[in-house]
Length: 522
View 1 (cartoon, rainbow, N blue to C red):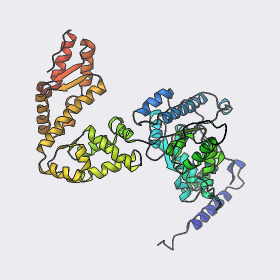
View 2 (view 1 turned 90 degrees about the vertical axis):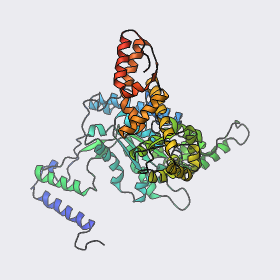
View 3 (view 1 turned 120 degrees about the horizontal axis):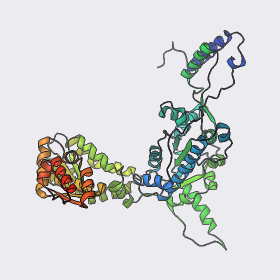
View 4 (view 1 turned 30 degrees about the horizontal axis):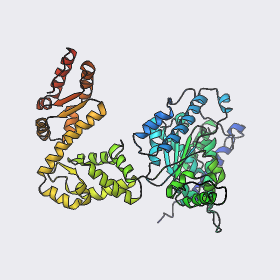
């Protein structure tokens, strides 16, 4: 219950206005610059140098995205081209004098990404911003429609860029604003009337997405107004700092699930009648790749809003095989997250290939894209995270049987455990060798007696097997690469001696390679 002694927001606003009027009146007859309604002073900094270095090609960006996002090749290609066009123009414009830059004709390459949930839309945009090195702001369009549209809400996205850039307005003016669930602000197209809130948000975004000046202080920000009043008291004028959206890239996305019917009807009508060209009609989510502006307008998007989004890409549904690729190949695989989570409890985990495929098949049944992987994994490993810490179990192997019957396997693991733990630990050693070989182009392997020694020394050190290997052989990528260059050797089998004294063995190999002899595996 609110305190009756505190003023209401309306009373507070009125008192603030009275304070401002009283403050301005005490200034006598101020000049127009210092009057109560001064002309806005545009203090947007004119870039004098590039705020960031951009020398990427579309192939560079797509190659970076391929590391994290599986499939979606057309979407990655279109997004890479749009980003390069936008930032190459921004870099060129920043090299010109202000008046020449303002006269440049350029249509912004704002992007619309269409596709079902969990296919990587947000992930794509985030990693583009990370690669380029610009501030990135993400917001859901629903927050504007649910709370009721307020004029300054949309502009707050631009101000948030300044916050992400730690106050560097120049860098923020080249940032990326990503608005998800934009399909939720579509205007109602039925006879019951139009959704004013959704249409209002679309309208508010129009100028923002093109080229406008956004005040760094919101008109609805009470603290900002008080600061302005204090500035006026002190200096006789108020600086109206602003940020231009000319070079801010806007990317919006949405599932647009119900639009498949609109697109499907249009395509089917085009195939009816004489003269129609025969062809295969797409189905389901695949229809979104054929969406045109008129389809979005029929869905409820404003024509002017769609006109600000010239680049449109569609992301496809992910199959069970795609989800398996995400688990096994993506640098952002959730499996790495679970390895770290269990390691923090002092437990090493190894995933067999069949287990990854089973998890992928179960996740595909969730029909939520890559998000289904987390849903399935949490269901499988929840009790493992609860029971294993402190149980004495130091490692385990995730098999297809464990995925299908996690409770039974957990009880067996807690009851017996020793043989399974050793098997998992040995598998981790060989997996470390395989990962090392794949990442560094120099093949290493372990003698079985060396594996025994790794398990023994890891136990003595009180560390996990993977952690021990990473620490013991941390310099091997450099040393073995040097040996390969000197001697041409690419295959090394490690013996117990290399486990006991990894640095000493590596040093002796390097010395031998400089002498012209091929080092024996140790």
